[in-house]
Image (cartoon, rainbow, N blue to C red):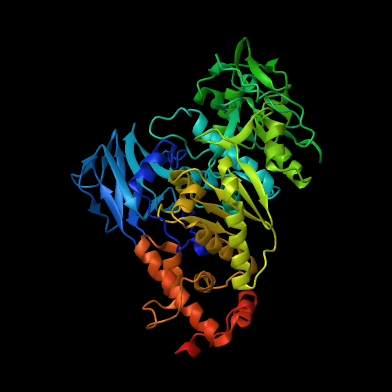
Length: 585
């Protein structure tokens, strides 16, 4: 299995922005947390893994903090020995790290990572922590946690909640910030191909946004199905008291969740199996006989259970059963329980803890045409989505054929320049926008970089009909605003007309030509077209990116000179003839 990695594809731009020291200094004050340490394979309790360099890639291993890195050239077994790591022979360490592309294998599973990995040991088990950009983490969790009933708006709401959960509260781990299991938020390291593109779009559309309530960052949770009524945090986790009041997280009726009928379930669990589960969790000793709901919360969910004469938390009970007997048995805390011989029969409704966003209800709202803002308002009344760093909400400025999303009121002064750039892009390409193009202008270079995962020397980023830019004022001060937006609008126009499989170099090359950045002069590029595609998608430096964009422009200009604009625009829809390139030689 391979880890989920997204590349920019046709969206990585040739327009560069070199920021001076003054610009960087101003941006630093707005820089938010950009990475998270995520526990890897946390439910497996592995004692040994095998680390090998990914095929054709470089991986470097450090066997202590501050050590010189060693190139990982072959498969290496790493074992836990108490609180130390054993690499075979006499090689041991207390902590190790791997950077580069590495393939890890354990418990019959293999994944390839391209993010920094830290390895330590505790009580004879390995502790693996991967450092991910916040936005990469959000994207992977949304892909892992969403389902086929979700649409664009419900996934945008989920992305905001996932980001808020990750950044606004502690999660009880020492070696990493969040685990990859449902204890925190589920993350499939191998990816979820069926949800990948939708999760990517939802993450981009909400980049950097979290929940706020009356000027303060708000905690947030989500669950699968509330059964018709959500729960308050105090109802589900009473042991966390004293808990600060959370007026945006109240128990309330949810008719959207039950629009197609309430989710009901039943389970029959034996006394012996329950005893084993509760003993493993330290909740009860063997010998108990009776089980009943002792206290319910305002939503109707069980808060505590009575085992003989003792009371235990209903949530602890659900987690204990899930860890030992599987998560498909006790789906929620909203149930009735009755004894039948040596069995206890549960009849319940809903799935999950019931706090915060109900995914079933959010999907139903989205299907009825409600947007992400309305969905968040249903499940977090009084809270709003705002920028994680500043707490400012995004304002929308409408133009003809485009909208600008910004946190800077002064950006309205650039609307005429942006409108002119769109008009020039349409005139040069002969294309018209199929819908409204969104331009999101970020307040700082770090905010732009963290949101798009683009390097700081990229001035703007386009994907489909969505454009992200560095601060408009910064682009304008460098006399770049018009040319950058014209370039981005050309990307949006070309991408809107391109069929799946249209070569990246052709799409990028046409933009280069129509931007006035390619003339087709000189000798043919050293890169062949397939090499140009790879370089455009994976350029690691400004120089590599410039070379790839120049080559794409050279090829596109030659084709335009030979076949004409109308012919090439047709190729965007139908595909390029096999002999088109050979004619250039």
